[in-house]
Image (tube, rainbow, N blue to C red; front, side, top):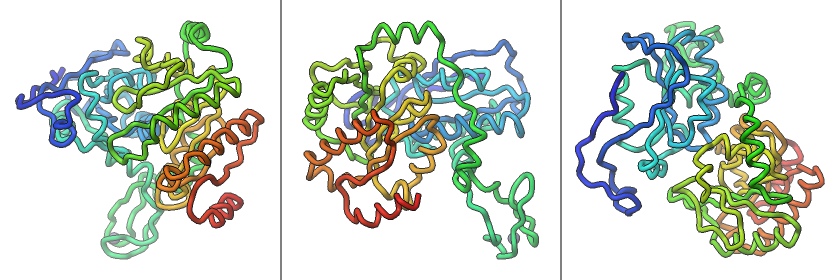
Length: 388
Ligand SMILES: [Zn+2]
């Protein structure tokens, strides 16, 4: 068994700006969760390691699709290890033999996650070393499985490309490209998803006891990268309005990416049980709905089929962004998208709040139709919604 490696200690200041600006130096620590009784093979060719240092919103695509597919095809019978963020072991329990969970003290590295990969030098370095333990399947493989387009012509020699069982092959130079990715046919792909296992009845019982009546989940984006965080006053106003409308707001957050909790709200992240993702999913599964703004925390409700509302940039759904595909691939239940540009919304928070309350009311009445909130070019987006 490969022991987690030591990196030369230079400076290690949790919570300081220095860490995000520069790079982290210190000890890369993992907590090992062993799920099977299988003995770890000594030959690296018998092991496969899935590197899951993705953003939360992207992590679920390989989780539901790429990893199960590879374990059923290319890596049948291999000893499988997933390596990922702290608190995520429940996601991989049904899939692999072991989960190597990054220590909680290193969760600030999440700020370096970008879609399927991480820009952390220390995590990249780990990925290079781990090849001595097994075949590494990482962000490039996940991205190709999701995004590879249907090829008409070979990029190298411009000859036609044919779709074969193992990939798309050039008829002239025999160059092989990945199979067309999940995004190329989302409706077909979603039928192949391997969803998470059922939540245990004990955890559901405990969640029932913890929850206030008529609970609605709210996650407040507080990320350092990309920004797009709404001010705390907006959230306290929203909490007040939702409480007046008869809901009990439950504040969801993951360490390192949250905002301060508004007063009078049940703060799930303050419970020690919140470190257990299965417990969090148990709680979400009993919600009336969850609400979020420009964040992929919708994956929680999506995983357990609970309705959710997401305010999203139209470019993510109709343009160059990929969140539209991911929402479809990762949501077991119904959801409502409210289109809004963050830069416009931040200047008209009253309207944003009003539209959020309208959306909540509509979802309560089973109306999941998308609509436009504060944004540029609303007419064009309305047309796109009608055609969708
Ligand atoms: Zn070619």
